[in-house]
Image 1 (cartoon, rainbow, N blue to C red):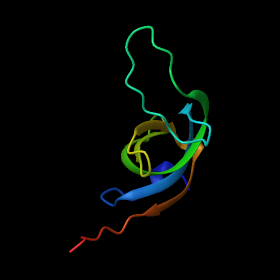
Image 2 (image 1 turned 30 degrees about the vertical axis):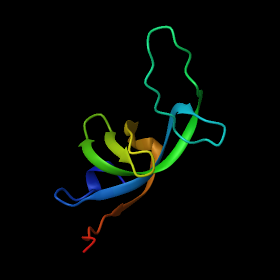
Image 3 (image 1 turned 120 degrees about the horizontal axis):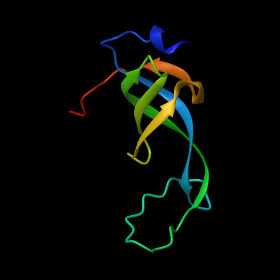
Length: 92
């Protein structure tokens, strides 16, 4: 599916992969570091499920929030797959 095919006005999510700092189990590490501190993770490929926030059709990029880590990533659309609409519900 092309990025332009995602219906504007609908909420979408997709699986994605990105290179970032991960732990031994491959989970994202979000470290708050001071100048000179060593990062506790190591560079690696992380795969997750993200809620698409912004679509940049001209540059084929999406800004999304990873469901598991709550971290925001900017990802090339070529590194995304299985897009699907989101059905929101309340937890009443």
